[in-house]
Image 1 (cartoon, rainbow, N blue to C red):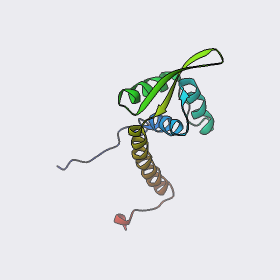
Image 2: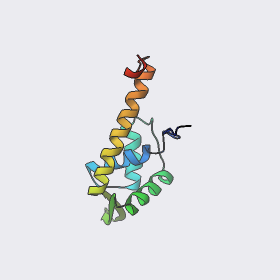
Image 3: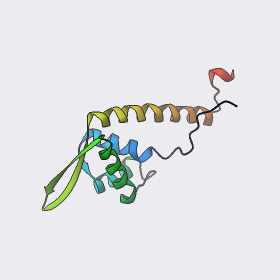
Image 4: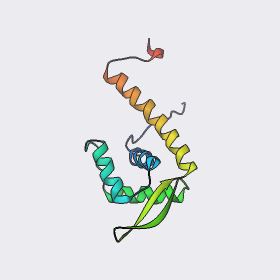
Length: 117
């Protein structure tokens, strides 16, 4: 029996991808990311702080993000930004998700792969 690669849970990497994409543009704090994801996806993707903060902490632990405390309008917040490692991770995730979205789109449109013909 041969081993096959599977994608057991398609949504697992979505918050990470979206967070890295947003932080690649500018530094942001957690709740700002929650709002930006909701706005930019027209509320199709809505993640709460309970999803965002663990992803931020994991990415920071992996060296993909760095953080700094900043006071704005009297409020102290932790702002996150992408490191070089995070930029590479974003590029890899973007390629993976672009390929996956293309494959799903072809299936929905009734297309076949070159191998199936």
